Image (spheres, rainbow, N blue to C red):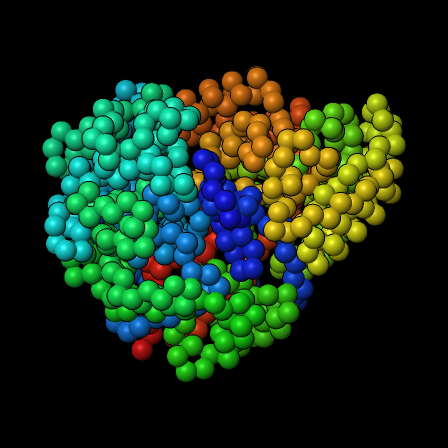
Length: 594
């Protein structure tokens, strides 16, 4: 879902890239610009189908997890990736790779149960169900399951759950989501409350007994049970809370415990004897041991997985995708087809207009019509490496998604120069000059040439401004920047427009993800009204309608091309899939074939 975390943002790291959001500046960080690759037609590409996500029942929330076909229990699996995890304390988790790893050692009130491929249910994890809303969605009540324990065998209690939320307000917590904290207090939540360590507690989190936890929000939140499923809201035992130190030595509620950790090199996990699969509908925990290796670049990982020799047969990767140097070879090799995973990005990628400078909507619409989507797609590696979305919200992860195509990207993906010229003639500046800032990577250099050529055919002069990749988001994040157009990404923290629209069109400030600087009181009011809806289906429909309305009446951005992940795994690893929400391979179904 970049390398910096923000209140409504999750960072999604992928291969040599990192995306921030809820996860695409897109899950804790600043997203890099899209990367390219070259490829041929996949030998046996299975068509992607957007996931189905529904709210499960109490029965759905019972364990054990649904077993993948051919599952075998036992053995050791190896996971290879580039980077070690910066954080293990649930309160500090927002990057998708970190929250993905946390599934092995942490549990929360709710989570996502895989029922079948592409079919997920939001269920109770530690809770008996996905929660009960009352008072119009202001109050949410959860009951803990019998038999849920910490790694030392002590029971997980409602006091642990309350303490876990309260400690997210502490000053040492600098990462992680902040939705629930703000719903309990105010937007500047750390000003309202500084955590439980001085003896002060939050009155609007109630624990009437050891099994019951009640959250009382200031306003309705019909989708709060989705928020509780975020890794950043995992549970920490009050008795074992070591504050800052907990980030390096977490106490497990999940199926594994950390046996050893050599920073930036390896992590080894072994079974948690006090985890009971009968209480867990989410995690299969089939291998006896996990061995994680870090410091491996995408090319090195791909070559090892292609060779599929020795111990690498039982290896896979959370997020390293096939790099450009190998994509054509991998896609064209029929022998690799059974070990190749493909999935489009769940994040939204955009070219933002700086509305402080780009004031004429006719010019902004002209750029949208002239946009060379097809040509950019080819630079990035063709249809196997990038898709051409037409909406702000991502069709692959938005519940209630409804397509529209205002600017003819489907019928004229190469751009409509004549339509663009017509709009420019109707504008206040028929021969505009714009400054296009871009992330200075080899692929983006090529993309910039394509954009410049296409827009200049329509009569728009483009001044290209390369930016250092390390400080790219710092540069475009300044309100007083000198650019008219630039790329940025964002991803939903859960499948709802409420974690996208109010963020990318939210507060305007240095570093905030409202890169278009869109300030519209009517829009802000409408978003607040949608967020207050108690009917989740009506809310999802309203977000989709607002998506189209924003592009029709304001046009603050160009919808960009969307990356498609291509990932290999070893021949003796089963249960391997790319999670369509997080865009990483989850550990829950992984098993070692005999």
